[in-house]
Length: 317
Image (cartoon, rainbow, N blue to C red; front, side):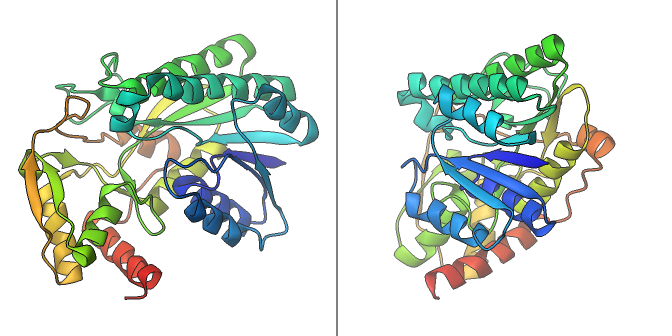
């Protein structure tokens, strides 16, 4: 049995791939190594995976119908962890066609491929951004989530609904996981943890939305990986499940923790929160606990400590 991981060279994807490979499972990764952030980081992620005999890499794009369908014909793919996407809420504002093409069109190609190959288990990475500026706190899956603030969450919400249709029509087991602000070692350089750690060394001025009073529900990578693997292993019909720590903190507190770890102050300036960004993300993870046995174990302070240790090694500090 092979697990296909799309976007498997990226932050979350490479961690999921490594966890499965450590268990001796067959893992097939597809990634196009796009330049949303430095492709060399993704290639370094893949190098860590090449030491496993059960690892295979295909360099390609999920928008390529023939390539995707060929993967399902050539390999005994029984599970899909669909983690490939154009990421970033604010970046999607300027490129809505690209985001819909990759995140919705690419998902369609994979669902069609899975149907063709008789693949029964499909796990889709979605996002807490689908909740927009909901007044229901914490965010709960029964929220209609029909007021996305930008193309990125709109594309992910549409992909959730498309996946459900494949459960309805062909009986595919589909689970959409709404990720909440995932961070940790080898994280994405465009995300706040890495950028703030860089700022402690470079002195770059950081722009903090609403003076740092926005709140985010940071979820450590190891907890996220455990949730993804649990979803791969448990057929649930068609479900949407929040996957987050459930303990939001303000950005200003997040900054203070990193300053304490680095022993350096971060230069900051307050700017208005963009209309694409909600004031808070806050996960109700009771459904994940009930259905997946999800139990996050790493709080934000400990997660940032581990991330800082990795960063120091990465930068040779």
